[in-house]
Image 1 (cartoon, rainbow, N blue to C red):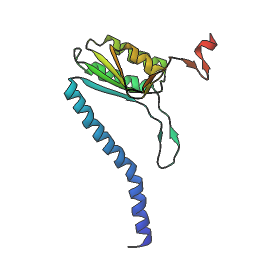
Image 2 (tube, rainbow, N blue to C red):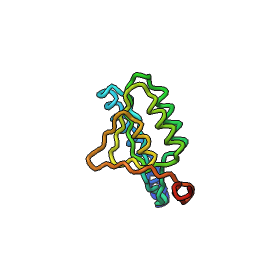
Image 3 (spheres, one colour):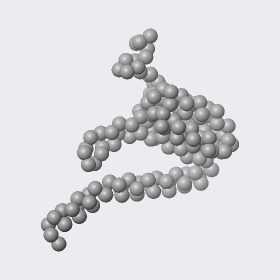
Image 4 (tube, rainbow, N blue to C red):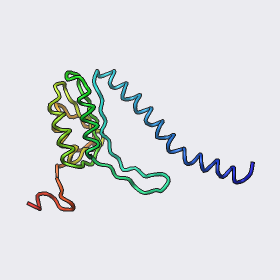
Length: 160
């Protein structure tokens, strides 16, 4: 085997490693979600935003509640039978007010019990969604933060 073959082998292996790691994480996450749904007799919906570092280039990717999230969560809520309880797991720095408001309205209108679980934080729009639920469960050090809409770089209150 030539040195270039070994180099390309390790290059391909290092390129595929993040993909394989992500797939394993998704598989284990789905298994845990199924277990929670079975144990609680509910539908589990995750809305999780984390700052993740892309392993190849090393720059941070920030996530927040956006219209795509609202579409996915609304679809999950509408696909759930009206009487089935929903467990919504929130971990988010907030995001677009419109998207958070749409999710909060859907949570509020769901006939079955909706419980929001906050393992770490639900800020701004995440707090808005939490307050629409029938029950909020916070871990010991979890926090909810004020709803503070912004227009560009300015707080909405300061614009008024």
